[in-house]
Image (cartoon, rainbow, N blue to C red):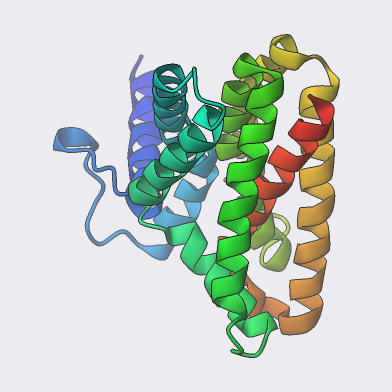
Length: 244
């Protein structure tokens, strides 16, 4: 029992720390993360970044479903639900990943205004693709929305290990486990091609972006690894829309 209790305490502290540093959600009491967490603790908490996607994803799904239900009679209902749920996720995360995408695009474009354009295209693309999926399957769009927020937060975990210590596989195992259930939920929603194409396309495009950053900036690209969350999320919706 003491070993189980210690394991649960470590899990709770690491998850709380990941939540604290990737969203605006704060846990209090014994679950409150330390204010002066050391770099090793922060690195260990990365494993639970996909777990924070459960919080963000569930909130986005609930709001999407509510707005979609209220505007069900309108042909623009799905698009409006996509806009509102996207705004919620930006608020919950403090636009951390959008800011990372802005910085990465600015670096790629040598500071010529590419950052603003990239963020606008990412947001517009996500909204349009979510509306497209909703037009095919109401259950499918909720499953894709949830899975995208979880799996996309696994992408920066992979990126930081790829660009840093490639022997650190513990975080990869834990992060992958967080992604299993959301992906399985996509199968009954719209069939096997739905999650398969979403993951394949997201992984392929994210790998291409990661390869480009590594060749262009070297180890410095690790600073913008959070931008990969946005790349994965957009590509995931595109694959899901094709699969649906």
